Image (cartoon, rainbow, N blue to C red):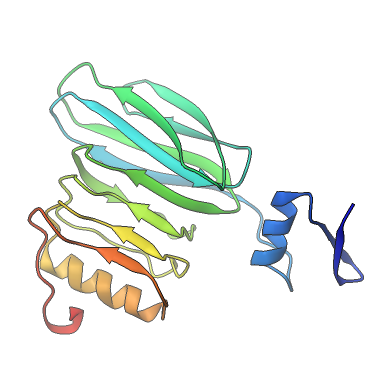
Length: 195
């Protein structure tokens, strides 16, 4: 068994991937306790199939509630996105929820799903978000998402105020080598402080 010793009170086993991730994220401190994460999205008509994808700590459970009484439980992994798919029987507005208790939420993707709104909680700090191909007219990024290195909002209808606020928030993170794609659809062009 290979052991890395960071200090006398803390041993991390290389063979234990979750412990190694914890060590890499919090080498000098005890990590925060996992909290329940709720990400909400609103899906508007017409009836269609939605695919949601989540990447997080290995072997953690997450529940996707589809807003029509259906739900799927998925097991997350750090190496790839785990997906769940749901087909809506009728036209309507549905509130989709991702409920998970994760120390590390790597990414969330819900693309081409006709989402009209996303509510991202401030208590998480994901690395990747992809909500491309939806009907988002506004988008608010909490200023606690400093780990964010990839954001895709292509082919939406995000207004100029949201684009400007988003770009200023991301600029405040001082991220190097990050990726943002706001192209396509009817996303507004940044102006003023957003440039």
